[in-house]
Each structure stands twice: as structure tokens, then as C-alpha cells.
Image (tube, rainbow, N blue to C red; front, side):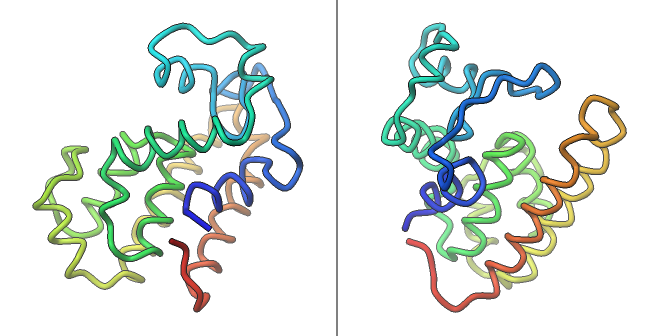
Length: 177
């Protein structure tokens, strides 16, 4: 199972058939498989309708996720599957513009938001579990900040459950490809 498949299966409705949501208080808006209308529009280079999001098949969501959240971010170049999962899921949930600097801070790199050769070299030599814990802590702090917004408070339990499940997952023996 790839990281994208795991994220969609575990956290973005894969087990439930990828339900469509369009909660006005969710900053993501129209969403299926964790792919928002804005994300799909960015991928296709055109405005995507809510109906297109509603009808999105899993294969299309995986294609979008792999391109925008793994290849374009260079997360696919992170060797350790635990770190790759931790950063990719953070990026999937909040955007790579938050996830990449979190990883950079975790390894002491300049948090410029670009996962280039310097950061990748630092990631390759750092302790994977320490990096994961630092990225998780950064993410939990972000969740707490978001929970101060009244219309976001409803999501805090799900966010905490998700990061707790990730913390449990990185201690398992089997890897993700």
C-alpha cells in the first residue's frame, strides 16, 4: 500500500467509499477522498465543479494526491516510510506550505518550504522517530491554533484522533511503500 492509498483509506473516507462533503464551516469546501474542489482545480488547471468533486473516482483522487502531495513536494524522495507518511499526511491535511517547514524545523534546516537536496540530506541522517515526533508536535500545535476559531472547533476530535493514529502507525513494524 502506498502512502497516498493509506492516507485516503484511513483518514479520507476510503473505508466508507469516499463520501462527498461540503460543510460550510470546513475551509476545504467541497471534498471527496480528501481532495478539495480547489485542489482538483489546481491539478487540472481549470475550475472544477462541485459535481465533478462529488463524482470523483478513487483512481482520480490517487492520481491527484500522488502528483500534488508527493511528487511536486518531493515527499516521495524521503527514504524512511514513517517520515514520508508523517509529512505527507500533514501536507494532505493542512497543505505542504505548513508540512514542509515543519519537517525542516524538525531537522534544523532553514524553513523555506522547499524540500530540496540540503533538507533531504539532513532528513536522511536524522533519527526518523524523532523527526516524526517533532512533526506531530508541530501539527498538534496547528490543530490547537485552529480550534480557537469557533467554526473549526467541531473538527478537533477528528484531528487529534488522526494524529494519534499516525503516532501509533509509525511504531508498527511493517512499512508502507
